[in-house]
Amino acid sequence: MDIPYDYPSILPFEQLEKLFQVINGLFFLFFSYSKYIFAFILILLGFLTLLKFRGIYRDERARGRVNERKNNDWKEKIKKTYIITGMIYIFMGFGVIFNFLTYVLIWILEPLPDKLIFEFMNVSGIFDSDYLYHLSDIQNNSTINPFEKTFYYGLAFISFIGILQIIVCIYFIIKQGNIIKNPIKMITILIGGVAEGILAGFTTSLLFFI
Image 1: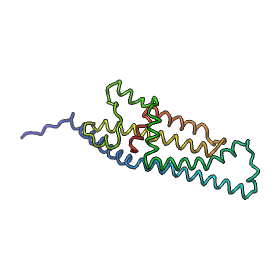
Image 2: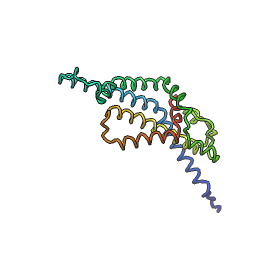
Image 3: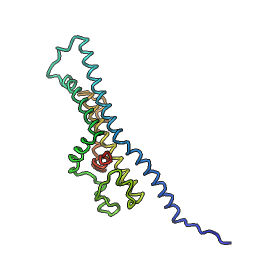
Image 4: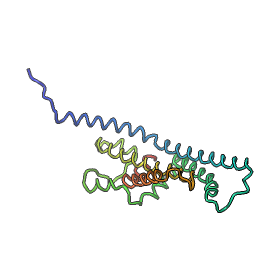
């Protein structure tokens, strides 16, 4: 009786490939809605900023101090920027939904010396990063193996988180004004977001929004 030969060197790679395919499917599902997640966060921050301004104005009016503001008070100047900041965040949210802001951001951020991980992969020959993919390109391109797709999705996710960290940090800095409760933590998160964008590329995730 012939005993079927087991291929120990092949099966692990087949299982690993299936694992990468599952991970890629989850990434594809996430990035299919990432534009709307990002836009929702921007619009939410905008409305929270406007509500904060409304609450401050109402409290000051109730106390009869509306006309007693000092122009040289930095905190008062920050309060006056709430409504402008809120409208900017809401505008940015709708700009992401309708893509015009995404195109502007890609045009502005593309010349930056970022994507250091891609540059390293180019030099080492591990990954061909001469072409940055849109979501439909990477999902439907059969010439890209599952590992490369997972690698690219991972960098796009890091890019997405980095941009989100920068946006949220700017919101809290404006919200808290000159009295930041935990400045070291805020600066650390902000620097971390910038570092993530430099390593993975700011436009890597933005291309998935289009």
